[in-house]
Length: 433
Ligand SMILES: Nc1nc2c(c(=O)[nH]1)N[C@H]1C(S)=C(S)[C@@H](COP(=O)(O)O)O[C@H]1N2
Ligand SMILES: [Mo]
Image: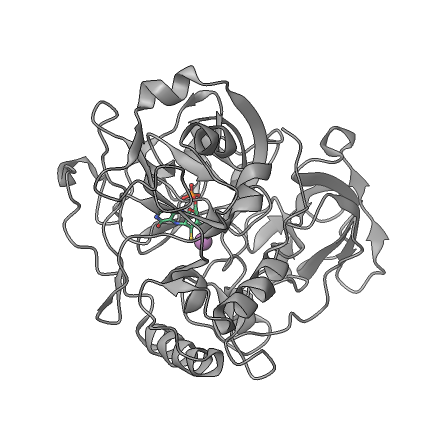
């Protein structure tokens, strides 16, 4: 399935704001205030959530067996420290775990981002339930159009190799490098992964469910527990997608890297939205609302928005993921002096393939890295650079990439209150000894 860039989230947001002002929007929580009031309210809510983050109060999972969870993280798969760094309910991939790996991230080390915990869903009783006035018979939430697990597997299958990245990936460098800490999960660079996904196009299912030309938004909702933060229950994890994007390249995936989706990555079925921030790719999807008016949820009004002094009053919706680069090395790695070493790493961008990568070791000049040809045009780009470290002592490694749109990595990322889309050059410390 070709990767498409034709639906830009920021354009979509601007269109939505106009629809909101024209009184055409429907929010789950908001009673259609003027946009400026909405903006102030959202900023206040975000600040309130931010103050108390990252407290995710996980109620008892409905219909799940709490005994299945490996430990208090709520994640089912093992999280050995050599592969993961733990952050409460989340698990960050260690970049050294990718050294010498192929293009995709093996499932055992793929990062996990859970607002609460991994639910156990029975594929025998599970249903994808579509409802809303954007479907021909306008089914209701109580009497939806349903598809079972086997129904979906009988439909034409598609494969896509896609990258999923948390919008907060790299957040800790706002604090560590720029002295401007942001609340939320303190991801290093390991909140990202590439996998082979297989499933049915969402467009195919929407067509079978009776999609009409009047539909504008599609909102998938997860079956994991409701998310409570700062004492406020935000309900189930859900986030609207414009119908155009869903008709374009969105997948309902039931396989990851050739196996049934593992529990932590959305079993039995998850949404995969290539190029968009990770929260778009709803796991354990159940209900899907199809609406003729724009839909809103806390995940596109108060969370996952760009707030800050030089941002619009209502905040700006996040666009594509920013450009990033990582070395496949431990933080504070030890490197032998004198011998030539091959530095390896990867660069990626939500806006399109990577065109070039440069590496800098200590105070040396920037020099081009060699790109792994097999990755050209793919969701991320492996690269290598030779280096002969001289004397013993600490050295800072840097890598920066430019994507096909010309977007690169500045020395400093432009900050925003919730610490999204870090794109600065990361200073990776090593010790030559
Ligand atoms: N239902 C549900 N879907 C979800 C989430 C969640 O907590 N619940 N987390 C989202 C976020 S913020 C990200 S970054 C990705 C992470 O996908 P992964 O855990 O498979 O790596 O899933 C998204 N889908
Ligand atoms: Mo995320």
